Amino acid sequence: MNDELRNLYQEVVIDHSKQPRNFRKLTDATCSAEGYNPLCGDQLTLYVKLTNEVIDDIGFTGSGCAISKASASLMTAALKGKKQQEALMLFNQVHILLTEGPNGRVPPDTLGKLAVLSGVWEFPMRVKCATLAWHTLRNALEGKEIPVSTE
Amino acid sequence: MVKNHPQMMNNPHVTSPVGGFDVWRVRQEFPILKETVYGKPLVYLDSAATSQKPQRVMDAMSHFFLRENANVHRGVHYLSERATEAYENARVKVARFLNAKHANEIIFVRGTTEAVNLVAATFGKAQVGPGDEVLITAMEHHSNIVPWQMLCQEKGAHLRVTPINDAGELILSEMERLIGPKTKLVAVTHISNVLGTINPIQEIVKMAHAKGAPVFVDGAQAAPHLPIDVQALDCDFYAISGHKMYGPTGIGTLYGKREWLDAMPPYQGGGDMILSVSFEKTVYNKPPNKFEAGTPNMAGAVGMAAAIDFVMDVEHHSLVTHEHDVLAYGMAALSTFPGLRLIGTASAKSGVISFVLDDIHPHDIGTILDREGIAIRTGHHCAQPLMNRFGLPATARASLACYNTRHDIDALMAGLAKVREVFR
Ligand SMILES: Cc1ncc(COP(=O)(O)O)c(C=O)c1O
Image (cartoon, rainbow over all chains, first blue to last red; front, side, top):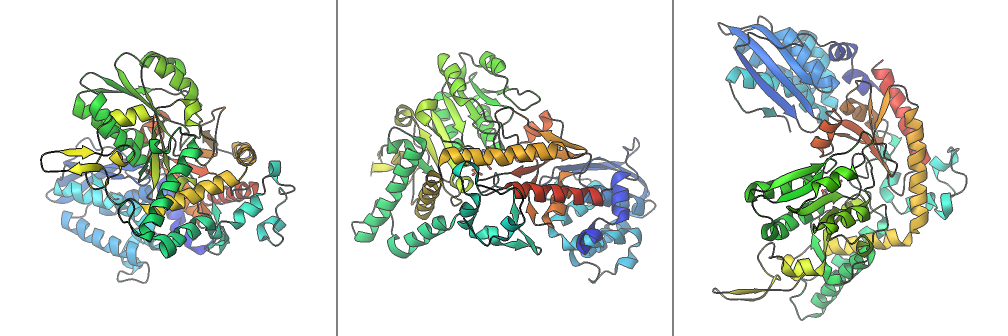
């Protein structure tokens, strides 16, 4: 297998895509949003429970490719207990990592487990898959009703 | 026979050309097939999205620009005459290709999508009223759904849908039941772009006409693969796209029976579609000009005509035999792949192989194959209602054209083994 593919489909990514964490609907969510990626038919619903601007709990449901599922799973794991503002700042960092790669402005090792997404940058067509959950998160936090679409 | 084709050397399947069809000679006409992708030879299995173009199509278009370019139907000068002739010859060629009675039954459009929209905006506008029905099928491309849906919404009419069975074939008895006195049009695809199903158009037209309903046929996928005879089919409308049949993008045609074209109101307003204009009254031109407002895609029409020459030069019977051989080989091979499920197993089937592989998302399959130089399409293929029918968000689709070989299928199988390796 070539290196780029190996970097894209790292073991952690495959693992999170096969067994996504926080893959559930929250019954006590304070906000939620839906996201679509019309190119590949990815669809996810994100649920967030905010208490005093802190993400107390977070979950998602839906279907999608390995990259979008793993990204959503990794995101939910990273965000529990984070402040709303911190979450959005983290999105910025992740976005830079996804578009600039491991040698870009954001060193992967500053992002913990999310660093495994650094292989995505070699596949520009797949950046949308990896950012779907994050765009949806932003909509959920900002209380937007319109489903996000990453096309 | 090509002597030094690298793929042929190590291809155990190429012994003699199938049925007199020399695929290796045909491949020589398509320069892009010599490209490499990520260092691997290109394996192009996405012709249902758009076909590759033979050199002669590109040559015909550049010849038009180099030697004949001027506006059509307008100038008295030499070049305008040449351009008009080239454009109108293309129309005659399409008419012959579809076996239309008259060349003036052929309207140049951007492609199948515009053809559907044209019929909805003209025929639909005049013929469909509140409470009427338009009947489509469960296997239509979005372009043969949405314009009818918009029309029905505007007119207070109803969209009805003929169901399909699990193999991906139309349930004709249901279709017959759904055609009633309120059915103003039956719109159906000749070949499904997802399932490959070849629909029995002749039978459908007989059924619809018996109840007084005209039939629109989406021929986008059929034109490159089947001989088409609109008179034998007796359909009322037939739409094709140049780019799916080895021609350029941005050009296609709508065939319409003369009686309908005469009766239909014009499509867009502008130059060429008129006989005379005053601020009080405009007299419209006759078909086909009535439906072709503005300066048309002249080079596109010329390219499409060259593509038709290409298709007609390849002996049709042997082309069909060759494509069917590769399809049968592909279906047999893929059906042995562990965890793979074929979507679309109609008995009458053209070169489209849709599949899903366990719970691996088609998009991931597409990315991994891409790095092997293999181009397939993944997603909903502009047919979301059809995906829902099969309970799938997406499929992977390998689609064939005249230049594909058993070797391409072997490459696909090897690629799928790589997919397995990643998702072990
Ligand atoms: C069955 C079918 N109908 C219609 C279309 C639309 O054709 P075009 O995009 O050329 O207008 C396509 C292809 O996209 C198709 O496969």
